Length: 137
Image (cartoon, rainbow, N blue to C red; front, side):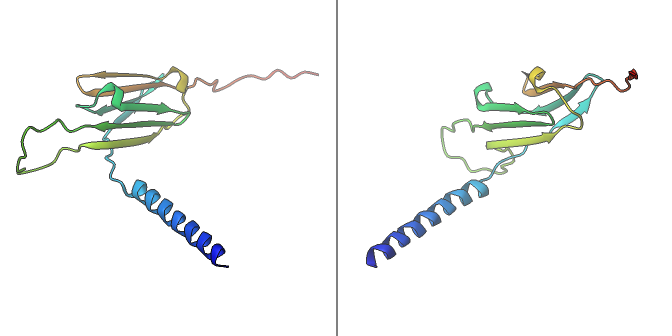
């Protein structure tokens, strides 16, 4: 009996520890990118300012109707402790999920970064709007 209670207590403790860890992930502060999103006849274009983010600290994932931009802006090392008057820059992990207004072809998506501006171009899927169907007898 004592052995069963001890095992149950261990399982309860493990479950609480897992809950704590999951809660930390859920509650962790994550910034969100501001983005301009527009479309042309051929593609959907997403532009966002991500100055200070290195290419290796950035992840871009595309699906049919979703683009996810995730990364981390690392604070430059400070030589000495400073007393801030204002602190407005966001440093740390960020994520932005963008639901696209039309079906796209993620296999042909392209991303470029120039002067701190990330531009993602996702081609639209071209579908025939009208098609004549031949009647067979």
